[in-house]
Length: 305
Image 1 (cartoon, rainbow, N blue to C red):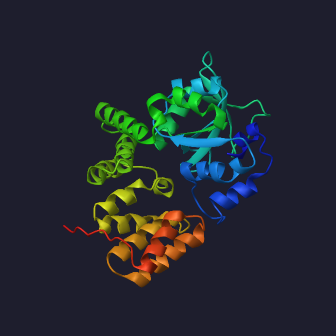
Image 2 (cartoon, one colour):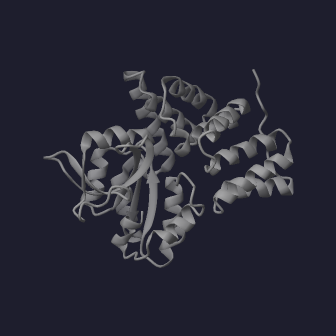
Image 3 (spheres, rainbow, N blue to C red):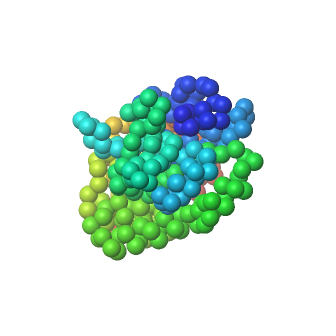
């Protein structure tokens, strides 16, 4: 993010951004909307820049954005040599259709002597799909109307998730063994509030198999199962992942929601405080704790088989 912001005169190092987006050094993930919030709530105070995120990107859109001088960050899977799969962000700075490559700046692998690292189209396409083709655009506010024109139907976030669901459904139908297609469909349906249907998509994805770190980065399954009243699955997923690491605030947040809905106020308060301890800017956990303390928490009814 800070590499992209330098295009707009941002001169600070990564420390202020990290303090806002992941104040606990062991925090495993930063969501696109957290990065966007940092730009719009903090950086925009002193720099002429705004940001937005959308799913359902494609290469044609990326190229049009880059050709129009809009810096673009994509979220994708990443498997550097010697490491298991993880989530990662890269800044796109250009492309070459002849060689079928994007030029990228990468906080892990570097910037290629400021010429950009060469990322083959096919590799980008494969790994970008792991995050529902999510992208972040940085732009000056006076060019917002121009940007919205380029985004087209993706200008509206809900419409973008509708498109993401359509794309994922088509890919799941054409390749039923594509676990990411099912996961992305569940992700889109969750963001559209279709929780019960989303849980079936997530179950299919889990049955097909996903990298063991998937739920470090992608948390809509917890939301879908919680909103559907399937607390047992929420806790099963949380417990399975806590066996690997504890520093994912969303897991503790969803444990708190389950405890609160079950009426265990003290446990819920403890889980929410743990989540906030890992990320003091985690607004959903802050709001849930406040609601619990002032008696306005709205419970979900548990559904058991």
